[in-house]
Image 1 (cartoon, one colour):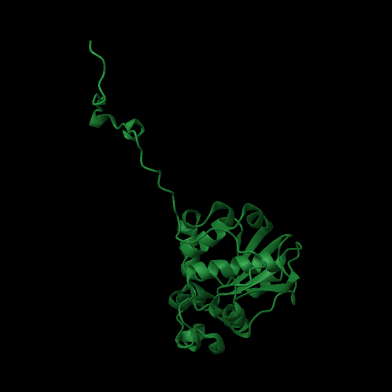
Image 2 (tube, rainbow, N blue to C red; image 1 turned 180 degrees about the horizontal axis):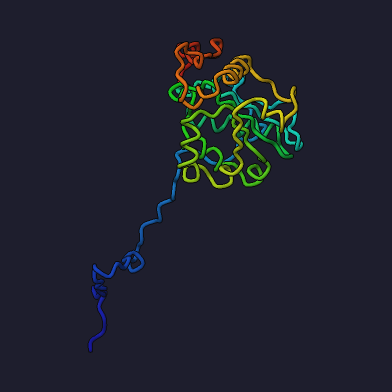
Amino acid sequence: MGSSSPEDFSVVVLASDLGIDARPFLSHPPAAEEDNWHDCPSSLPSAGDQNLDFSDLDALNFFRLECGSDKSGNRIFRIVGKYLPAPVISGERLKKYVFHKILTQMPEGPFCIVYMHTTVQKEDNSPGLTILRWIYEELPNDYKDRLQVVYFIHPGLRSRLLFATLGRFLLSGGLYWKIKYVSRLQYLWQDIKKGQVEIPEFVQQHDDILEHRPLTDYGIEPDHLHLMEVTSSGYSYGRHETAWSMR
């Protein structure tokens, strides 16, 4: 046979029904695409980053470190859902703010979260379970391990049904088992001494209503007087609707 010429080439024939990926046989395979779950960076912000300005979010008081601890010695981060104007805060900025607070105020040691779901409105105060799961998943493992328990205060019927049916799919397994439902403040005092966490007045008022009409919280007893609509007007979303801009 004669010598090979520069124009000689080989042909590789692959049967299409075999399900074989032909890319390894190509001379110049395309670069593998990165698996981007989010369009946001996943790194924690530096504690010394001077470009981080969260004074506007700090003023809302929806997420803060309390001076006290629960009975297990875990420092308390308090979250008041009603104080969060979710429609005007992007998920990216919310994540950076949460990371910044934990990194700068609780760099070590176990901590817990007291989340007050009292009178929260989905349209005004909820960033969505997808965002919340993403924020938790982006935390480094040591921060996840240091989070011991989430006290979920005043969960409504919708929240209970959602977590009971889809909670294991919508939340990380580690976070799902850390949630402890607290239907009344009197049950919270079994794990946290009074005075260790500040309770907003509207939360206490709502709790008093449930003491007298307990079935209202489960949608069984009619609420003709609209007692469940007790809100903290000073922190309602309407107050910030015109003053805030999307960041």
